[in-house]
Amino acid sequence: MTNWSSMHQRVAAYLRTRRALGFELTIEGRQLERFAHFAEQRAHQGPLTLVLAVTWANASLTPEGLGPARRLETLRPFAKYCQLFEPQTEIPPARLFGPAHRRLPPHIYSSQELKQLLAATAALSPTEGLRPVTMHTLLGLLAATGLRLGEALRLQDQDVDLERRMVEVRESKFRKSRLVPLHASTTAALAEYLCVRQRCLGLAQASGFFLFDNARPITGDQARYAFHLIRQQLGWDKPAAGPVPRLYDLRHTFACQCLLRWYAAGVDVNQRLPQLATYMGHCKVSDTYWYLTGIPALMAIAAERFEQAATMSEEEQP
Image (cartoon, rainbow, N blue to C red; front, side, top):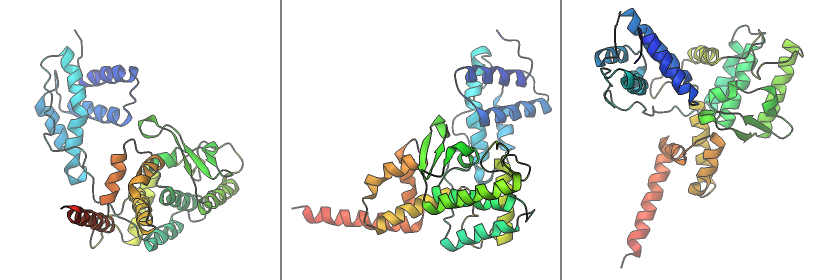
């Protein structure tokens, strides 16, 4: 039996148990704590109910209708845990609001757009400080390597090996680490950034690779806000057609452009995809295959290849 008197206590017990088993539950933990606060604001008493779960899910402001589905996805394992001790707990049905994970159409940056994006970092304030240079280098690294934003922001100085032209991504998604080779131009840009950073901040031991003027590592929220300002400056926040460009689309662009180069060079893409999956830190090659449908140009190539294969198959029939 339990003596839970609030949703906060239920959430704390659940997180304590799961984390003891090795699960970090960083994002899920914050979501569940928000749910507990939500329940407390409404003076909810007793076990979790479907009405409370659905009300909280519908309060999501996430666009594209994904918010409610993702909130319920977070609640379901928590509800199952609570039901072990409180049989009255109501478990939200799976997919009540549809799938919780749907891929949004990516914006694939053109070469001209990437140049505009990097040039626009110079207008970030303070213009004479480290912020413009940090964002310029960060965006350039994301575009050149396809790293996830969190992976780039967690880099430490010792993870960036300029001599070997390589960065080490430590314990990224699903706690996997990997080595990411760098192009010579990317290595030169990182070396130049370190020189500027040293001029601005001195030789003090850095607590991260990408820093702002307060010598503290840039956070994800700070990077996204700076990108938001750049997007507004360029007039990309309300495009006439297509999706609004996102930071994550730099990763999509890297993958799609890589595939287009391979197709243009006549490379066997199916043979190379596992290499791209490893480079990008995908746990499943199927995640990498998704990029074959990422842009119309790749879809057209895939359709043409399929048509050629189908024609050859018909010709071989007796």
